[in-house]
Length: 318
Image 1 (cartoon, rainbow, N blue to C red):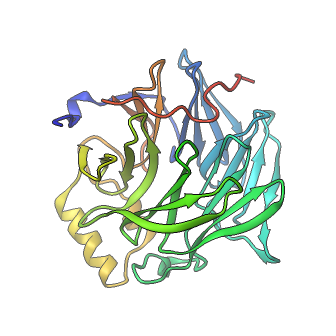
Image 2: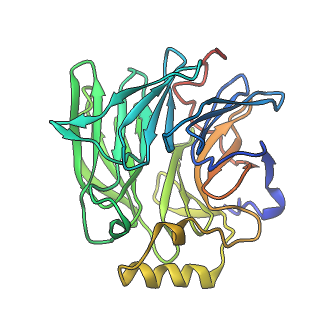
C-alpha cells in the first residue's frame, strides 16, 4: 500500500513518564499510561499530568474498568492482578489460580462484558524465561462464573485482543515469534487455534490492536517495528527504528539461551525508545500512540486506518 510512516512523521506527547509500557485512549482525549512508580499516569486533553497511585507494583498492562478504576498486571515477582482506584487505593484482584499463587503477570484486558483476560508469559521467573522452546505461558479469564484458564502451551504470552465482533481472540507469543488466533465462544471458551503470522529476525511481537478494516497491528520491542497484518494475511511494516547490530546481538543471545531482560529493554535506535504497545486515539481514532519500555514520552503518528473503538472509549473522566 505504500503507507510506511517515516520517522519524520513521529510526534510525541507527555513528559517525565516512567516506563510507559501500556497506553489507553478515550474519546474525550484522555490518555492513561502505566507508570513504573507503581500506578497510572493520567494525561488530560490539555496536557496536564497526574500520577494515580504509586507504590510497590510494577504495572505492565492496564485496563480501564466500568467503575473508572484500573486493573493492573503486576510484572514484579509478587505478581497478580491488582485494582487501582482513582484515589490511589490498591487492592488485590487476582492472586492465585486453582490454589497456586499467580506470579508475574504481563497483561490484562477487559471486554464489553466486563470480563478480565489475563496473560501470563511464563511460570519460570528469572533470566531463563526468554526461550523459544518452552510453551508454559497461558491465558486466564475472570468472569461472573469465576476464574479459569482458557488457553495453555503459549511461548511467552504477551498482549491479547478479543475481537468480539468476529468471535476471535488474538494473542502475541513473543518468543514463539507468532501471532495466534482462537475462535472465541460467547462464554469465553477458546478453540481452533491457528497461527495468523510468524515473525523473524528482530521481531519480538508485544503490543496488539486492531483497526476497523480488520487489520491486526503488532508492535515489536527492540526493533521498534509497527506491523499491520491485513485480513488477507499480507503484512506491511509501517514504522521501524532499529539498529541492525543490536538486533543481531539479541538474536545470538536468544538462540544461545543467554538473553536477559536488560538486553531486551536497552534502547538502540535513533528516535523511538523500545516501542511496546499501541493505542488509537484522537476524535477519528487515527492517532496512534506507542507505549515504550525506555522512554519518558509517548510517540504518536497518524495511522492510515481508524482503530477499533476500545470498550473504554466513552469512559467518563472520573
